[in-house]
Amino acid sequence: MRIAFLLLAAITLTSSASVAGEASHKGKGLTVTLVADVTAVQSGKSFYAGLLIRHERGYHTYWKNPGLAGVATRLEWLLPEGWKAGEIEWPEPEKVKMASINTHGYEKDTILQVKITPPAKLDKTVTLKTKASWMCCAKSCHPGFTDLELGLPVAENAPASKLATRMSSERTQYPVKVSGWKFTAVREDQMIILSGQPDGDAVKVPEAPQFFPADNMICSHPEQPWTTDGRGFTAKLTASEFPPKDQSVLRGLLVGKGGWNAGDKRAVEIEVPVTRK
Image 1 (tube, rainbow, N blue to C red):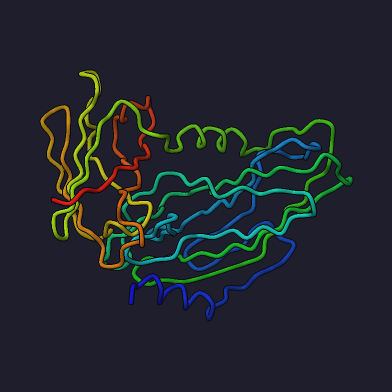
Image 2: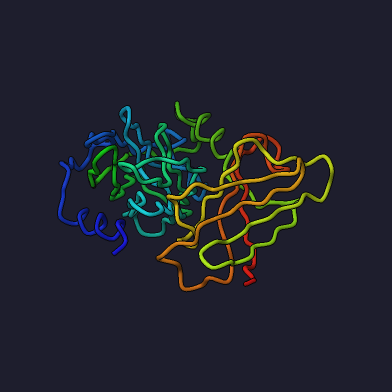
């Protein structure tokens, strides 16, 4: 059985202390805080709220696809009637280790942001509530969960919070759809060979490239050998033993210093049909 399944089962059996009504909670290896980019709410005007995760040294939490081990952080919103909460807008992950296993997650402090849209009519104050759950790992793993609340007044103006600039800046760096490249993905037994060629001479392969699969098509643990001719690249990716039902498309992020024809962004999204040799 995949390691992540065992860890997910553990999260239902292991509880970290939770204090309803408080915006922060300290768990093993981390502190989580419910934050927003505004200090007040305007009727019908969207804003961003999210989970600020401060990791202790050596600890990490997980991306939406943790890889071979781990469980993604989750937010279950409990909002007043008429409110809407979007999905987590995930920043690019990094390679992290659960013991000796390579996985996908975050060691640096991270804000997992969600777009919140209030209804056209509001009361004088509102309380944002979310149930947060996570897996925080170093040499060992520690599942946790807590209820968090954040009260915000309703006003005609919505002044920015202290975190607004940081949250906005981080959103500008979120992965975008790739452009200016042509890709192929070929299945050869337990390997998927991903190749890319830029449309123009000005596009270069970034330094230290890495592919992060959006599902379990590719195993997170093995190294990814990359070769380049100075323009295009070929990467040898090890297929997972626990693949998704749909194995016809390779989905995920290309990450690397220097951009992929995407300005200063480090990560781009790709979807490449998989053929068999």
